[in-house]
Amino acid sequence: MEPVIFHVDVNSAYLSWTSVENQKTGRGPDLRTIPSIIGGDQKSRHGIVLAKSIPAKAFGISTGEPVASALKKCPSLVIAPPEHRLYRQYSQNLMECLSSFCPSLEQLSIDECFLDFSESISEYPGPVEAATQIKDTVFSRFGFTVNVGISSRRVLAKMASDFKKPNLVHTLYPEEIPKKMWPLPVGELYMAGRSSTNTLNKLGIYTIGDLARADRALIESHLKSHGGLLWEYANGIDERPVVTETPEAKGIGNSTTLSRDVTRREDALPVLKTLSDMVSSRLKKAGQLAGTVTVEIKYSTFQSFSHQMQLLSPSNSPEALYQAACTLFDALWDGEPIRLLGIRGTRLLKEGEPVQLNLFDLDFKSYQKDEKHKKLDRALEKIRRRYGSDSVTTAGQLNKRK
Image (tube, rainbow, N blue to C red; front, side, top):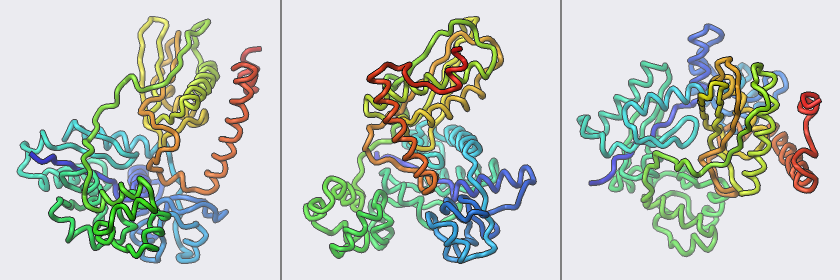
């Protein structure tokens, strides 16, 4: 029996989630109904467009372009800042809802996932009916829309969900590839980035169908193994299953039993900072990035509790780990005395492997800041390796030790 795979993707996630929150709290307009974007700063005119409304798209505004350019196209454009914590909460609520339809769920990013409906589809009249029920339930429960792509293969389900939007269901079975996928520009193929697309265009390959019919060896001679992958995707070749579980052993973490029970948040934060630095160091040494962070708290009663969250993008940065740890700590701690704290990074990826970036990573100002942090991290890492883990510390931690 052929697999039944759904790909669920939130339509303009960041803008939709901000709009829903605006409607719930009355703090602002529904950004989806007016020319608007998420990202950048309206006063400084810096940053890039992270998400755009359909009315903004009518002005020719595109995701990833500078805010200054977007404002020239539409001077009345409404700009809202991104809200990281809010988006994580909406993402978590969505994934919990989708899991109630199908337990075989693999989250691909903050706003999209795969569902393996092979075992569950018998409960519905058919795949399209099941997908329609999912999108309608999401809209009625949360107030935002999703697209659902259906296929027997992951890459085709992913491609199908990117067809006409919003709030629609599309199929892309192998027999539908020539009609529905091959006429599309090659740049719309999953994993075909700008550089790869430019190379393919130079070879006279402009559509996905051109790539599918091209000689694989020729493509690989110009794009190496990635070219072979793109050729396979263009032909609908993708045998990867939906991975619903990550082995627990694949993680790197540290914990510490405290010299005395901690009863104040300001006493716990320096410990979390030290643990974040230690986990970051171990991840870098292993050449790994963490996709998920877990925080564990053991109380003086010896009861243990843990909570985890997915990072917006896989990272081994101490700042990213610490920010996530603080968020998890605030959600988990019930005010009782703490005996032990621990941080663990899971869903590991090798450094250098291609990862699907979230749109926040495209902000140039944030990118510059992140690069400075990386250089600082490398310098501190060298010092600690040579002179010991306690040779460099923050002023806050130093005052705490005194």
